Image 1 (cartoon, helix red, strand yellow):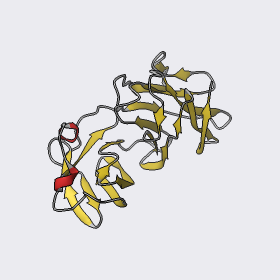
Image 2 (image 1 turned 60 degrees about the vertical axis):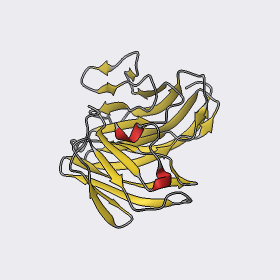
Image 3 (image 1 turned 135 degrees about the vertical axis):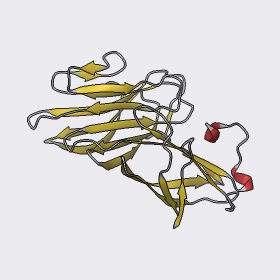
Image 4 (image 1 turned 180 degrees about the vertical axis):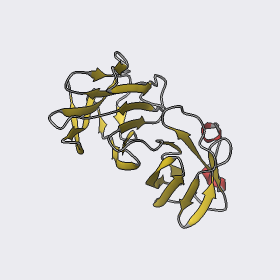
Length: 223
């Protein structure tokens, strides 16, 4: 995709953002993208090219809102550090029934392999066990950087808790504070959680308790 082309340069006022489906990873075309009050539309590759801005010395956050008739609205802030955009790739979830949840993990090139886990009362979804009856499913497993790793939870019980955590499976590089977990419920993005910089192998991100997701970011040696 164009946003990963080597040599792509914010210094000359060009930034390419990429928008994809969180389950299929197919390009999301014709999405409305509002950045700093200006509206853009993604092309057939799911890309939006920002031109005419001087990013060379920018150290700021720009508000971005993404909308599409078939997808949950997405809001975040584009973070620039010394003219470099920290995240260029965004994964959006299609609208779901109100009782469904979707967890989408993205990160940079390193660490190479982060694994997303979902533990329920009678199942444990991960790359080892990708589906549990009709309750939950690992939609995407990414082993070579960037993600997404995506898990969809079809239903929850009021008398049960559901834990979400990440394992740095590759282990060669520590988590660098640039990974993100987006938590969707039904038609809405409920939370966007930043993973911390840590040398621990595991990071707990939160739990669903009584049908509500409770963020709880904790570094762990073991889950």
